[in-house]
Image (tube, rainbow, N blue to C red; front, side, top):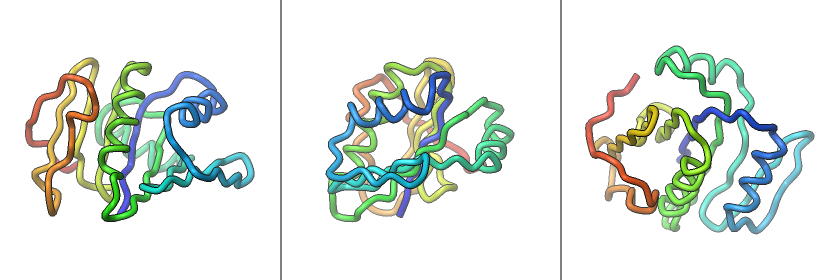
Length: 145
């Protein structure tokens, strides 16, 4: 199971990696060329540099996403809490649109400007701990695009 986190980032890739490293408790960092993969007890986090994926999401949502982070989650862990804590920290320091999708096609969080909408109604199992964002949000049905 994986979750995609799309957002706009105007700083360098190095600054993005610095942000990740200061806001996650990772056990191991695997360097793969210019990319890094962060391994935690709850998920593996990596930067996906697919311009095609970003292009299609930008067309679908009429946004300017420039980064895709992929969280490959470990079931029966605290991955949901950690994912939403990280997303909340990111949205506090980074303006602009943000999108989290489950398995690449089910939106569970969407921020446009300063309004955050969440929807875990299409997920199997229990709900997501959106309070871990530490940001104000509204529950509303998000449409699959």
